[in-house]
Amino acid sequence: MHRLPPLFRPNFWQRLRRSWCRAQVALRLEQWFPQIPLALAVGVLGILNILDGLPRLSRFFPELSILAPVTVLSHSPVLRVLGAVPELVAGVVLLFMSIGLLFRSRFSWAVTLLLAAATLVLLLHHYGLVWSGIAVLNGVILIGLLLFHRSFSRSSVAAGTLFAAISILLLLGYAVFGSYVLGKGFTPPITNLVTALYFSVVTMSTVGYGDITPHSQDARLFVVSIIILGITVFATSISTVIVPLVNGRMNRLLMGEKKPMKQNHYLIIGDNALANNTYRELKARHLPAIVLLPGQPQSMWMDPEDLLMGDATEVEALKKAGGGQALAILALRLDDSENAFIVLAAKELGGRARTVAAVKDGKNMERMRRVEPDLIIAPEVLGGELLAMTLSGESLDGEAMMSRMFSAKA
Image (cartoon, rainbow, N blue to C red; front, side):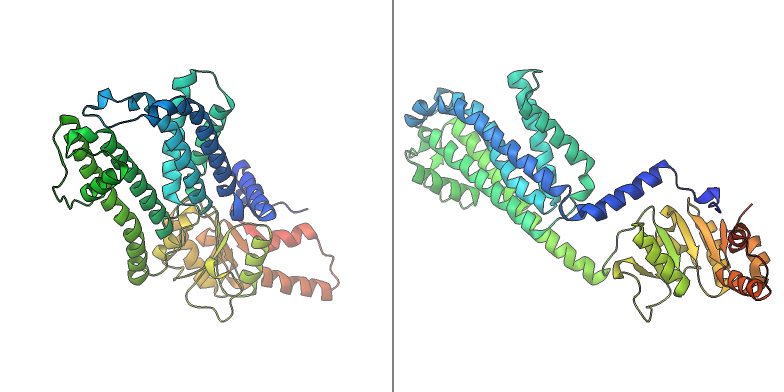
């Protein structure tokens, strides 16, 4: 059996990548991995955080039932209640973020990463270095988020809206609760939750009617925090909703649809039977392939997302097609001179890509060798020779035939 030239034998990492690509296709991983497993794990982590914080919070329910407004925050029993609040809030937010992870939201990924790290710190603070099941789950989630960070790259209006709603609700809860707890520090005093809600909304919106004013130091500092957080949250919320929408529209209008550059792929150049069959066989083996043509083909024999337009004899066109990161550049046009210029452009581009050139006319074989591609393929030359050998009754040697069809660079 004729062996492939050593230059084209895949190394260990390339074989591993091919096996991973085959597994992705066989198991349809692109449809559910890694977003669904990570979302489920984050949801479970959120529930566990809530269940872990509720027993400690329930011990202080009697004190919460007699909670009354004070002038100075240190006089309120609320400080003892706040110990379980961060864990509960983190659990609730993690539940919301697990929904965003299902849609591969970049924002949900970032928030989940921060909260998972924060909850792991809280667990270590409460229990020391005793690794419980929830701590192990937390660590696994952190590793998974870091490993698959490229899978969560969507910045959508839905994610921005979710962020805005959560931020505003949390800020409103903080403002109402703080206004009620520090109620005696205001003039007139805030003695009920309805008044606290009214004051919070008026302050957060920067309307400031002046009918309720802070007079204690704690109350004034609290109002300052509401104003700063309110401006920040509202500005950030608007930007997360409007900016992705405007940027997406502007990019499509000014630059058109931009395809991400592939890596470790095969760049096929040519619109003929040889290029068609090569593309089909590579795809059948779950290998990534890109077709670069000078114009729109008459028939779409490739997937639309695998088609790029450009002159392959130009270095810039090969660069846009990811030629520098490709495994091989296949010059399979019908014109031998064009294939030679493509090989020269690929060598000028540099990179690790191997070059393959097709030769249609046997007279150009020696000239093509002077360009020094890594592999020369001449199926039509071999076909004519095989037909002549058959008609003349000569014996056919498989090793010799493969050597004549594939000519590797010395």
